[in-house]
Image 1 (cartoon, rainbow, N blue to C red):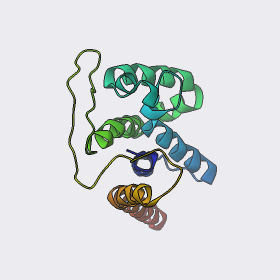
Image 2: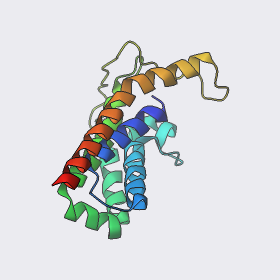
Image 3: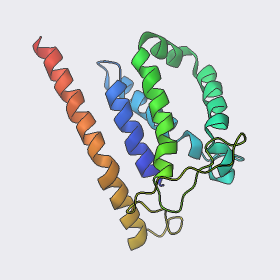
Image 4: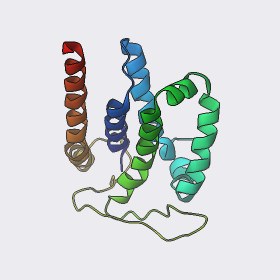
Length: 174
């Protein structure tokens, strides 16, 4: 899985559960936050992410990281979550989307419940492949992976954008 798929998934969930704010900066920060949550298991922190794949892609270990992150954010983030309950659901869905998306890739087996169980989860979709090598260079195989991710995970983002726009338009007319 590349970061592109997680960015598209986080953006989609963010658009669907974003509080109605007038200022662009609030909306932008919210979407960036949802993208960050959707990418949490891959954050490039020593001893985390792809350095310790079994730990960072475990729902148990990652759940503890989410709790720590929630406590660290506190302040503004805590008020948003308390005042808008669907945001809590959205953050959870964006976070869990990472595990689902990673399990969709051919030749991927996630030990989601490590250290309790080493059993792997794999739900391969034939056209979703992992990167043949880490970019650069951005050659044809890499671009093909990105294109297939964009075609797979882009339409839900477009749909979420259209739904959000329609909801905003209907609020203005009432």
